[in-house]
Amino acid sequence: MEIHHDDDRNVEAAVREPQQREQIRKGGATHRAIMCSVMWLLRLLTTCCLVYLSASDSHTDLPLITDSVSTKSTTAAKRSVPTDAPMLNYIFDAHSTLNKHQHHHDHRWGPHFEGESKNMTVQAGGSAILDCRISLLQDKTVSWVRRQDNGEKVNLLTVGQQTYIGDPRYTVKFQYPDNWRLQIEPVNSSDEGQYECQVSTHPPKYIHVNLHINAPSVQIVDALGEPLRDKYYEADSTIELLCVVRHIAMQVQYSVVQWLHGNRVLNYDTTRGGISVKTDLMEEGANSTLSIARVGPADSGNYTCHLTTMPDQPATVHVHVLNGESLAELHHGCAKSVGGSGSLLLLLFVLLGRIQQVFR
Image (tube, rainbow, N blue to C red; front, side):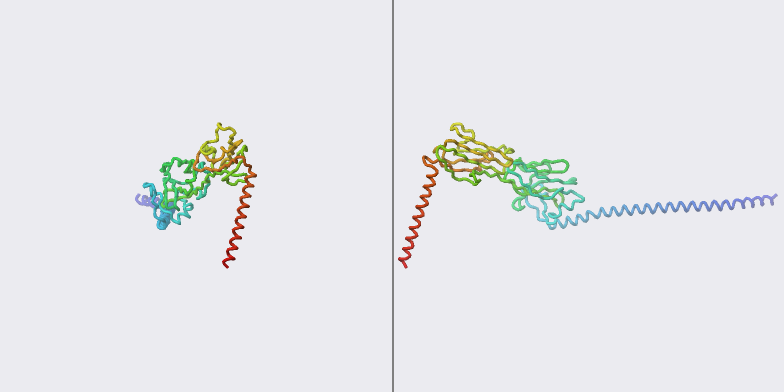
């Protein structure tokens, strides 16, 4: 019986041995597959880490480059110009040559201007709107300043939407989404000059607007458009004087061309009669004609044309009304006077010649 049991165990062992080897073979293959998967995941994770570190390095290097440029710009910059406003002097920090030529190019990562410095011409009495478009402003502040005396004198006008100048004609008219416009209304000749829109970066970025004002001109002219100083009329004739106003927005200013004889206003005079004032308004000025019928000696004197908004810039002509003498007689008398003067000069030359001969 013992011999039979041993034989049975040997048979079972012989049967199990190939099965165990097959299981071991299959387990090794599964293990190798798991190890391959783990290695692939490790490689993928390593690649992602390298990409992330590379991107982080590129971003951290950028400020270093910017700082180096900023350091050079600040070193080369002029010292801050003292201003009339004690506060916010940092706004006027530095006018380096590098920044002057490159301020509108180094804007890939911060505030930058949509446009460049320019010249602008406005009629006196009109409205000047100075544009300043800024993209990516972020937390920076926009300011307007005015430079005078070749840039040595700086006047602070606005910071943000707050006005820092006492002149109520200056205001900030922000236009969505990015236009910090400075408005001056109405403008006059004293507003001419250089205006600067700044962003409070370090060093500051800025653009200029050179504002030119067409100053108004008022003249009394003749038929050829030449300025008149004196004008002669015969008695009982009609005075006609033309006043030409240019470079002013008459309708915006609500300005009126006013005529005076001495200190007496003629526009609405009804005491004398025969007085007519006709004014043709244009976009940039006016033509005004004064007519006075049946003039006499009492109508002689100074006639003045000026604007009601600018009485300190008049044009004046002296009118002569001849009493019982015609213009032809006046010209004839002048010719006689000139002829007599010529004869007298000729006599003097002859006498001088004789005296020189005597002394020789």
